[in-house]
Image 1 (cartoon, helix red, strand yellow):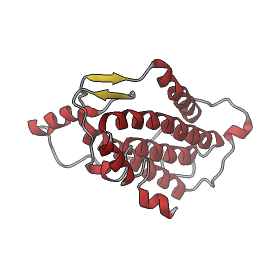
Image 2 (image 1 turned 180 degrees about the vertical axis):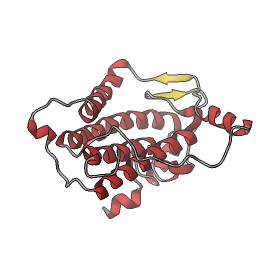
Image 3 (image 1 turned 135 degrees about the horizontal axis):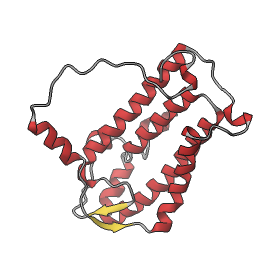
Image 4 (image 1 turned 45 degrees about the horizontal axis):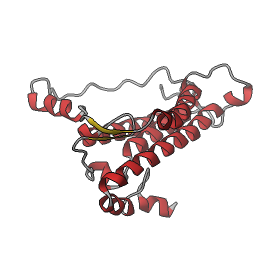
Length: 207
């Protein structure tokens, strides 16, 4: 996304970023830590195929609308916001923030992560990093990044996609929380009382 008046209509390019000055190529500890964080434990309990389809279909429609639905009726392609450089930069910043949060949460979750609703062997209840504030920060980051992308696209279909994305992730996280309550019992119930699902509890109360 290039932050210019035209950029809020396209997702094909991003503004240049300076390359990082730090060289970590000679640090085996850094790379081994990254590799560990993105491994996954063996699965102990897995959701059914019908359970998975209940949210993957919704998410698939959301992704299609946001990125691939280019030949719909005029209403779907109607612009909402004025095309300005400020809108373009805001879209870039929001999208980058969402991706950064997603990657941070994924790193903290480590080998407990799974793309599906599962319980891992030796599954841990993570309460550090962004998990101190919300129970599903990866979904928070995805929603925030999608909001930035929707702002850049600035078409009705993007906002519909954002709603569907929220709905699909809500269905998935409710299934995950059912698994977590079964696994961690009172510990997870206590965790749920002190955190928000997608956004921090205090922010939700003030909204």
